[in-house]
Image (cartoon, rainbow, N blue to C red):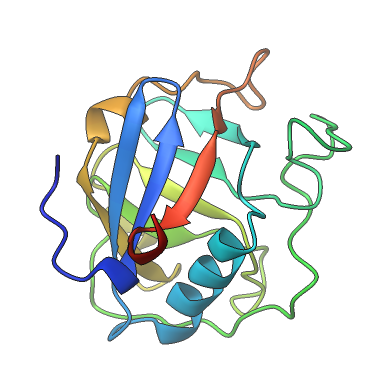
Length: 168
């Protein structure tokens, strides 16, 4: 189990194979970290599928509008939605997109991130300065590595639950 230094800024994602512990970076991207905590506390991420998983690249999830496997799920629309909250302005930094970092998914507009995010399977430095980095996996990356691949996967894996460690 990963050592949790700041439970208020740590996210616990329960996958089929175990828990993924994510250390948020509120000093780097406060709005993105706040959004993730708000959605986690609302239960919005629970049962949301990984709708785009590219081997050797990243696993994307977080479409709370169309990606909930238990509620109005539509694999064809998964990845096209977000939350009811407004989009977030980019919070670019010098933090590199290394293996295990959490990046904000968005459209071509840099200020369009909302609820979707991705976890890098490897160092993806070509994304540096183009997508907001706001967290890093500090435990359970082996579970992320087992997420079913596909765009979209035939039988997608999902986040069974997402919690702020302070609330767990």
